[in-house]
Image (tube, rainbow, N blue to C red; front, side, top):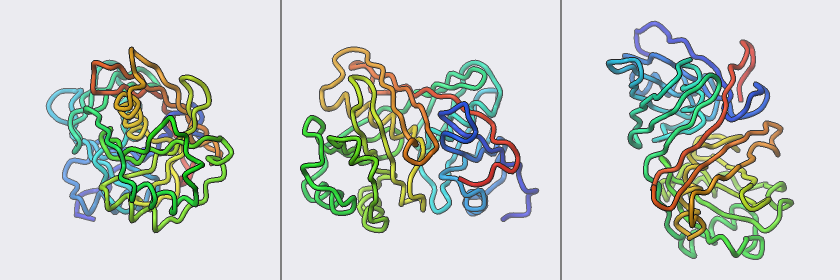
Amino acid sequence: MNDLAEPTVLRYSAFTTDPAGGNPAGVVLDATGLDEASMLEIAAAVGYSETAFLVPRDGASEFDVRYFSPLVEVPFCGHATVASAVALERTGTLRFHTPAGLVEIAATPGRASLTSVPTSSTPASESDVAAALRALGWSAEDLDPRYPVHWAFGGSRHLVLAVRTRERLAALDYDFDALADLLRANDAVTAQLVHQRDEDVFDARDPFPVGGVVEDPATGSAAAAFGGYLRAVGLVEGPRSITIHQGVDMGRPSLLEIAVSPEDPRVTVTGAAVRIPDGGGRS
């Protein structure tokens, strides 16, 4: 840690209105003067999947933002963005300048809608699919043939796999090191594992071994990437709104809403956030 006074770290849970649900995030509203090593040290001490560090620019709505897991910096984090927007307690448009690019957020009390950087999605190679299945302990028959396996980007990169049954998703038990190696080799952050519950409703689980986290209860960047994925595979013929349930199997239910259209390469991700009472603990 450098010689600056230790900053205040706020704790919020995102994509929920219940502090016991959602994905906890650390938020430093003014990280002016903190270097990278200090941010990583603080994030490791907080212990959540990510902590966001904001540096105010001129004006009340512009910030430079960096995101750190306990192990590494990530280019963008959706749940920490929503948490930060709510923690700022402002209404209107916020502009976060992140390592992934500019992210605009429409903020209202207790809720925020972020508009991602342009998304992209490309098919995974046969070797990557085989490596993912080995790491997950799944077979090719477990996959939903309507949804090809892709590497998808929504501010950070994610491996998207869809399974046929909710039971297979619920029974997730994966090889932490093998999946981390595959994701790291492809500059990816999580695996976005999904099951289609209804036409516009999906269940999701997101292993995050690259960040030293077994699983994320809510992953806004993966939700944005998933919206871009759906567009790329031809499943967005007009404006489409999707609801994603995540964290249920962890006992931290989260609700993420995404809006995607065929004309706009960006995806809007919406959710609530709530302050975690002092003593709320680590994720």
